[in-house]
Image 1 (tube, one colour):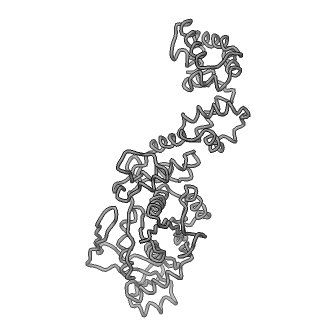
Image 2 (spheres, rainbow, N blue to C red; image 1 turned 180 degrees about the horizontal axis):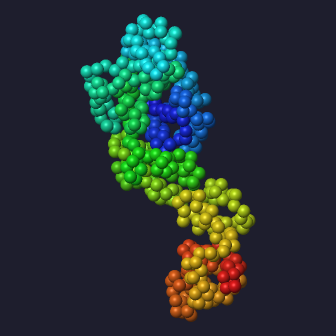
Image 3 (cartoon, rainbow, N blue to C red; image 1 turned 135 degrees about the horizontal axis):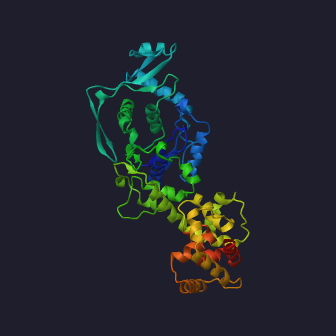
Length: 456
């Protein structure tokens, strides 16, 4: 059997992290099985459409290299791939259901729906009146079906009202359109969020009504906030584009998203696309909700940042610092600065704050820092370093270590008493790079300039 999966977002806004996970699982499952990944745009809710949302959704999906094999303007053998362009297709099938007495119309009169169960009368009425179409839910039946993740699931059909499958504007609801499209597009596996599990009996009944074999279903666990509430915008960022804008690498995001509900049997947590495809298994997806832990995403992003080749790190970081009015002509200094930064950030948008002390003549205004610098011992240490940092000195680690040792012996101090005042006047903060790294980046001339400014 040729495996065919699909991702079918609605263009009602941005790509949610939950949507990205759904797209990813569909993508890697199809690739693992040498199958096809289909993109379909479910734009039947005309009242909620957002301008340019479709283009942005496609752009977001492609930015994560989830390239679809079929979809809008790509190998459209079962198209069109916009549901709004398939209304004539849907009409053929809902007319068929009415003829079979599997569905019926309701005439819209003001705020009331008047059902008409006689199919012969229905076809006369739909020519003259506004109407909706409802699916007949059989009563006195428990529907049993199968989910690849959850096993057998049962639904008491007496508890389910007849759902609308065609709205008064002529557009299908999700329940109807997704069944028709999945069948016609030969989708073999429907991998989607757990929120659609309660709708499964309606979909199974539609397959039964047409005499079609349903695809295999996998309903993914919910994404949760740390407080176990459903992940939502009210609790923080859920737009994947916002994560990119903050400087999360797409590879890290994909790696992190993949582990939200799935994990292999070993303890490996860093996966490339290739290893995800190789290791992914529906059987290893958990049933319970997956916690979206931003701290873990930050950690994972820092791992990916550290693994970047330095030149590539500088290049991909450029958009986060290119607007700064700093003098970056000294390439040797730039490389040293970014070598330092690379090991100290977990997001690229943190770069400007770390660049600032190396390129700006800052002023110390913090009272705590001023009190440290202005103590008599600190001032003596700063003056001592200014004298001993000769401009023709060779800046190497041995020289700085010796100077630190000489300072300890001369002033009978050690540790923070040396490092804090020097770091404050050289870097603007009491915590930061070691003195050798700091001075080697700044250079003797700039270091002496900052020491002298503090003395004055």
